[in-house]
Length: 325
Image 1 (cartoon, one colour):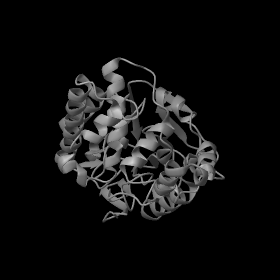
Image 2 (cartoon, one colour):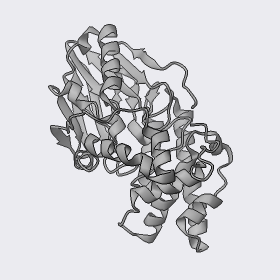
Image 3 (cartoon, one colour):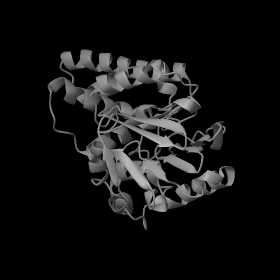
Image 4 (cartoon, one colour):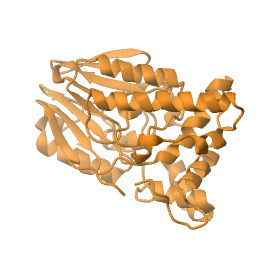
């Protein structure tokens, strides 16, 4: 599994930090801290309690203002960005209304149950264990947001203005950017996967492309993705171009009458094949086909993981394919 240089806590500006996971693949997410005066704001928690505790300890060692987290912002509903919320349960926990609703659909207990059954689930269970087997989902208390917003929310952390900008539905239903203009920093959640393949659970793709263009237009120096290393405007453009390329390739195959999985297998990923988890093309094409059809019904998540497992080489040989993850 490819590792990421410079993982751990990284200071970006005075009172602004990124927590970078050791790798950028499934479940290994980034987070952030903004501090000023006597106040602190945490951007996302991690996939389990041990990882979140390690991060919080590092933040408290580096930044006295992080001793008590006043505010937590969850950028979206995926568990690798919110399962650790209980460790800052005394904070104001903010998410978009759409994300808050979505978080209740796959709480940690449900993920623990899936992982317990994974050994009996054939290739898809094998793939689940490959993706998520290193995380501990038992013993986590689901701790949802206690404050929600729609559209925009302006906050202050000490004297620093912080802007929450809802750009979903895109990756999920309620994705949020966290912009700290004084620090010239934006935390993007999973609007950005750097050196890894984006996965579009929700769409529409136009919203995601628009979110990338919004980041590209910001006066920022530090761009912290949901997964992968800190990036720049070139990295943002790379994600946008992947989405545009897959959209156009999927559209031509949709118009030719191919089904979604046939199209996913047929699309040549070119330079994007070097990104981790290229098998996510199966989910991306499925979401695009749903969008092209104007169909609100989503494909069963186990079916989508089965398609990714097949593309990644699971089942049969029992060995993962050459996806670098």
